[in-house]
Length: 218
Image (cartoon, rainbow, N blue to C red):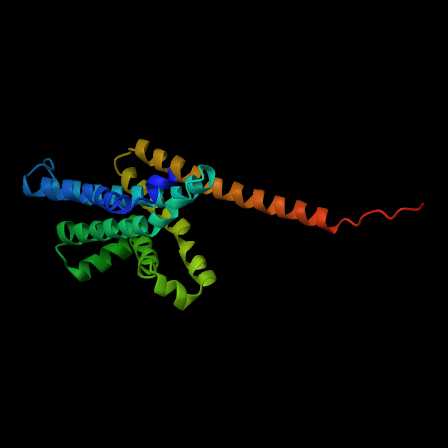
């Protein structure tokens, strides 16, 4: 698998695959293929794909570690940027179709409706992650600070779930919400387990290294 992932053609293929949802939505919009309420369809679909890409990004490290697919790491930034691409589309669709680009009304709506505020907060937090997803940013910030900043993805995932939950609460439809909750819980739970395992292994190694050999009395 690592050999396939390192193939020069793999990255362009994955890039095109990530664009497929956008291409489908664009085609549907131009051919009137998005149902009776295309504006709502576009808003929901771009939001769904944002959450899906966040799940995909969070899945990279567990797959890389457990399956030994180390080459997956080279796609993580691109996948993260696609998550940002779809959240920007989501915000644009909301601002255009729901609010008509009335910026004053948008600001009032964000302040008035908690689920909009939570979603907008996730977008704001995701913006610096997208802006620093380049080697120059890592060098400028330092690897440690860069890694700390990008841990915000866990907060963003939680805000995204809350936004999705409140949005579906209006129609009392939580089936898909629970699926995303389960996926993200597993991915975050694996990180907690992996961290605890490393700490335990490190502590055991330290304890063994601190043991002094018994001196012979003969």
